[in-house]
Length: 480
Ligand code: AMP
Image (spheres, rainbow, N blue to C red):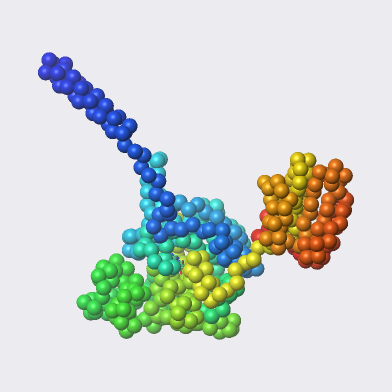
């Protein structure tokens, strides 16, 4: 930096500046003292919501069903970060897409990295596949994930800014048999959730080679109808013309229905792929409709695309999920050329539909035993007794904070348990427990040592759900 000459005039200016500065900081300090702290806004951000305890049974059901099918079809669980480098999505989802253009939550980290909250899950999973050298694994590499995604969209019923997806991806298999299997898995998840009536829509958007030719035809057609398109589609015509086909505006739909269809312009390889897929679906007895307007919004798709919708008109406002092939994504991101296919189901939308069709949510096992205690010594002993029962797979309820036996029994009644164990001062000293049958009111005194066996027998051993925290999917390993 150039040195400033210490002339008389300069010194004056510096002094004045210092004064102004110190006065300013004093003013600012006073302001800080006077200003009341900004009130905390006690609500979630727009388009985001809490999942309260009473909702969790639906979420449990979705998790259980999707985890179960993942296991049955050979998908291993993967969890990737919610935050990724922004250019991962720009490169994979595509620059001209709504997601990249308008909907991403972008930010710069304190370290200066350009980061984004994931708007979908496949890009991160593809990144992980390359990063961890999964191409050496036995193919297809089948991965399953469940978690949040973020899109800065206009919130409405079934469309949120934070939402959850169940995501299935399979890498390394070109055969359309895998496309059929993925569509089957997606349909089975939805139907196993109790949404029996569904509609599977399929289409083929070809590979980059045949799509180039088709795109030209489509652009020519759309140019001739440009004045009939909405503002967004006029812009899409330049950036992403295939998206015009699935615009929700009625006037664009009218244009789209008469547009040239990608299935009529497939190269031989894509044509055979699509035809074989349809044969597999027929073989599976899996009904489908070919929707020529189905293009999906993301650039990485090739050949097969599909969506799962509710089967009846009333539920058919938004897709429950969708997916397709993305044979070029891994290569685009810098990995070895690897064909792949995947799909995502929206958890919130599945739950809305489950509620609409009155599908039963998962019922967590309820405690059938209540442990009541009275007096200091009994209270101490009951804590250990509770954990012994729990370790042995017996779900127990308690209300340790309550002193009076009467109020504890009231809780036991309210919970509707079958047995209440009562541990008083005398029992704590004797090494016994009172076992009360709540239906008959009959009480007996048993040895604390034999309690576990007695309770198991009383609960009719064949219906006791044994809980082992052994890392299996739902925690409940077997019924004895
Ligand atoms: P997409 O890949 O955009 O079709 O998303 C797959 C599925 O995720 C959709 O079919 C929806 O079920 C769900 N989904 C996508 N965006 C949202 C959103 N903004 N809010 C809730 N669910 C969404």
